[in-house]
Image (cartoon, rainbow, N blue to C red; front, side, top):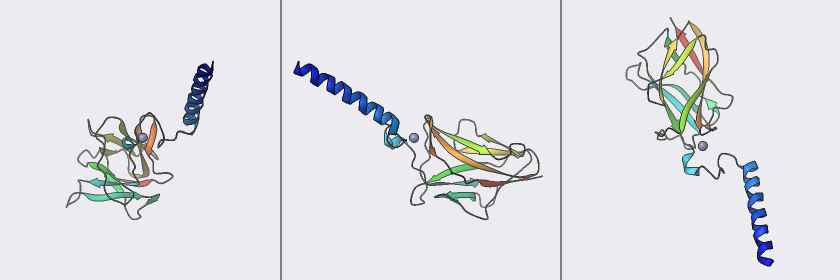
Length: 164
Ligand SMILES: [Zn+2]
């Protein structure tokens, strides 16, 4: 009898704990995904191969602010220019970009009539920006990780300028 009561209590405790974790489980506490699998990015920057020397920074976001004076510039149907995205840790150091398929890049373009973003085939963190018409719009990036965002830019966006 005593054993049975203890058994029942254990079950009730387990159920309660599971429900509790289910409600409060944010991405850092998710009991299914090990914490080391989440990307703890505090920022990102974008390089282009267009300029000489290559690897000019064309966009920089760190701890809820976008660096002023930088613009991602492309032109109509520009297939030669290649952009690469790199993440920063809490100290502003470049993180190793994930190579697994569980982390995917997502983005939001302010006005898709100006530009189209296309990832390099088989790569998550490199892409082309094909201008569609001359003008300005914006872009922001996310890292998707198994149904939740490991990284967002909040309300911040990068400016994009499409030249002729
Ligand atoms: Zn995650």
